[in-house]
Structures are given as structure tokens and as C-alpha cells.
Amino acid sequence: YGYNASGRNLNIVGPNEAWQLQMVRGKNYVARRVQDDEVAIIANTFSIREVDMDDKENFVCSPGLIDYAIKRGWYDPSSGEKFDFAKAYAPQRS
Image 1 (cartoon, helix red, strand yellow):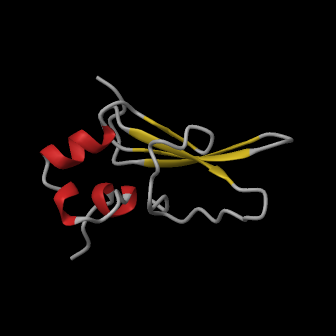
Image 2 (image 1 turned 45 degrees about the horizontal axis):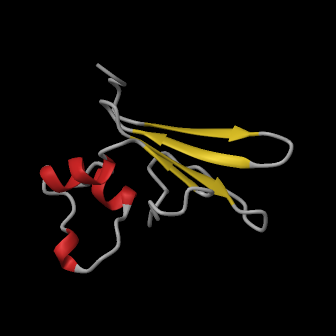
């Protein structure tokens, strides 16, 4: 169930705001509002880094996004580092 490709980056743009949506296989995703003084360049990799789950005006995330990364060993909250979506979910390079 859910999305079954390796991952996708989408831009959702309207006259008053723009969002970056990044999806990974399964059911996990994160969206980040592009700030008014920013330009978003979307490469062929995940670019959303630090995610503030409490900032509901600028981030929308799938339920369990961080818990899944913890379960898979991709993120350790006891490290003291903030959650980094790209670091946790982007494929490892050889």
C-alpha cells in the first residue's frame, strides 16, 4: 500500500505560496513551505533537511515519519541531532 517508487520530489505552486513535497516508497512524505525570501532548486535527490514537526505552518508530514526512521535505524533521537529528512531517507551513496 502507498507509494511504490524510490522517491519523488514535487513542487506545488500557487499565486501566494509554494511547497516542496518529497515522498518515499510506502506511505511516508514531508512537505515544506518555501519561504517568501527563498528560491527552491529541486535536484534529483531529497533536499528537505531539518524538519520541525511542531511548525504546522511550514511543514506537513506523514504520521510516523520519524518513528519509521528510528525503527529502521536511520535516525537516533538520543544523538542530540535534530531530525534531518534527507539524511534519514535518501539512499546511501557508495
